[in-house]
Image (cartoon, rainbow, N blue to C red; front, side, top):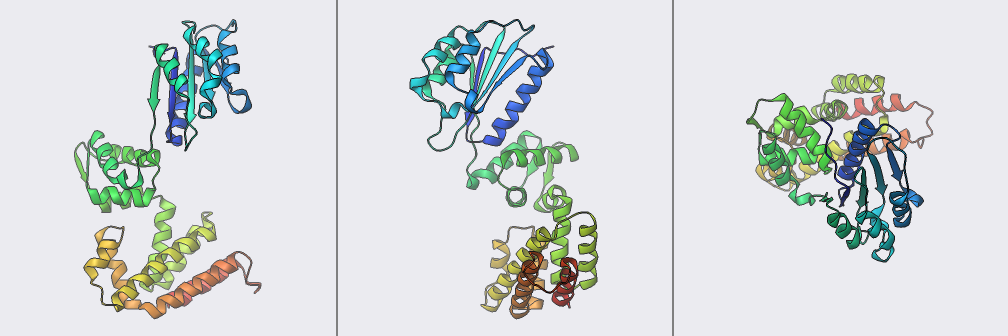
Length: 325
């Protein structure tokens, strides 16, 4: 059964990713219902209120429902809305127009557009980003709707690991929902294991092998990842991040800070935090500071700044052996 469409829609807000997803979905539905020629797209310089009004008023010989998709409504002003307001009020019954406004700062869909869509019996939808500090709570709520019992720590881990884009977070929650039975309890370790990209997990494994003093394991991991096409600058980033973090932990331990306080400050599962703290204590701040300098030299060399003539992969292997020795 074909979906029922209203005459007009306004989809606006500062969650640009979600708005883009909805635009793509509507275009797909329009093509399914009316074919590739069943919709008209207005964007860039063509997306003006007068151009859209003219298109709505124009005669068309298209068969089936006619769709107009309009980008950039956040750039319009109320004073430009006269012709479009009248055209929306007289939309033919076989036509749907959808306005997309990716809002930011003072760029917002004009109030007269909101009012015109609503008077035409259309729908106004807001796609608003959640503030970063509210994301863990939002993640827990979204997980609950998907039938998952996600702990607050697991929610914080997911945000720290995946990032702050709500669409990406929701995709990862949906993957977890497919993986587990309804009402499954999900902790931070489970989140880290199942939501990390495989390449990123191996990158962390490379960094942790360095700190564990396992030169052979670190070498094997580096060679495997390079063979799979991973770029050296990205791997250096993860190594550098982990070594700097370990250096900060070692300095905190030298200052007499308790392991419990340090552990509480780390955004990772408890078991991973315990291991990182133990490795940091074993290696010590002095050696970790030296390791940080070695990785900085490697980063410079990977950008062609060493002048040694040695390949970047060879320099990476030599650096790994020296740090993990």
